[in-house]
Structures are given as C-alpha cells and as structure tokens.
Length: 222
Image (tube, rainbow, N blue to C red; front, side):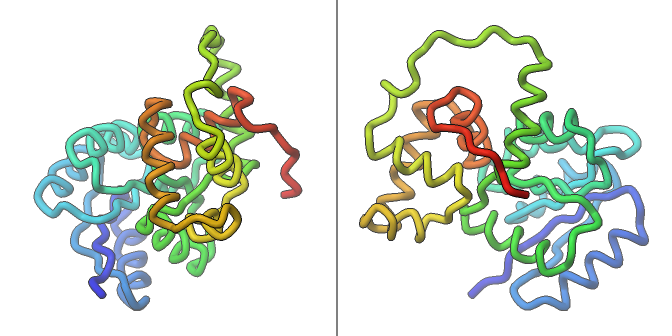
C-alpha cells in the first residue's frame, strides 16, 4: 500500500523538521516537501501534488487560510488539515469555510495526529459536535440572513439518515452497517449530499446540517 504523501507548512523550521521526523517514523507516511508560508505552500503543492497538507495558519506573508483556499481550488483532490496553536473561533470558522478537512491544535498527541491524517485521507473525517458548535456560533456572529430554502426537500430520506449519522462522527463503514447498505453506497449518498447542498466536504456537511436544523442538535458531552 502506498504511503500518504504529506506537505508540511509552518514558518518555524525547527517545528517542521521535528514534525517531519515524527511522521517519517510512523509507517504509512511520506513527507514529500516543506514550506514556510502560504505562497510557498501553493507552489510546492502544485509541483508535488501531495495527498494531504498539514497547514499552519499565522505565517508571514500569505496566511494558511489563504493557502488553503488556493490549494483547494487548484488541487481539489488534495486534503488540507490545519495544525495550529490558534484556538480562536474565527480561525476555525475561516479554515472550514475555505475547505479544510480538519482542524488540530499543536498540543495534539502524535497518535491523534496520525489517526486524523489517516481518517481524512480515507475521506472519513467528521466534525465533532464541540467543533460544530464553535462554527455555528461564528455563523451567528456573521449576521447573515438565513436562506428560506427547505433543505430537507432537497435530500432523500436515505440521504437524511446518512447525514444524521455523519453529524455523529461515524465513518462510512459504520454508517453502512447501521443502515444495512454497502460502504460504496454510503460514499455515493455523501457525494449526492455534497452536490445538493453545494458543499465541499464532510466537515462542512455536518456543520451545515446542524446549523440549518436538517438534523437535530444534541449537547456534546465533551
């Protein structure tokens, strides 16, 4: 099985080098490049076409948020996971808005980092309810007018069931088992959901569903 090809983006060279060594020691990962800011990240991503980019946010010059948007536009198959010290809701919101597939703090344990990378690469990353709540609060602060569309009517009953399980953080295989359908069928439903709701990834879909009331909100025990 081919390793997951990674591009590391951070303006602190010592952190990048340490992270690269850490990842290279874990089976299944290959660090194919490094960048010190958003502009270099975009150029390196175009040349290297990594499977996944680990992206810092606050860097001199072009920020990680800008780079995330640009990379997602030119390389839609490349996943982006934010790895930052920032716990600001605004940074989280902007990252998800522009297509990031995950948002981790640098204090994360190595094992959790590895699992997040693998999950995102498999296309199974889902937003936690705690993270979704933060994003929804930011949506409210933006004072945007809610749309009047009935989103439930856009989705079939089965798609709504898949979306419900997605907001609970369940991977494709578990969703399939719960609904007694094949994993590939789950993937097809997710593709249709994203298309109908004009969204880019599972994180956006879960957050959108909770925000619009397509699925009921529950309090996260975390």
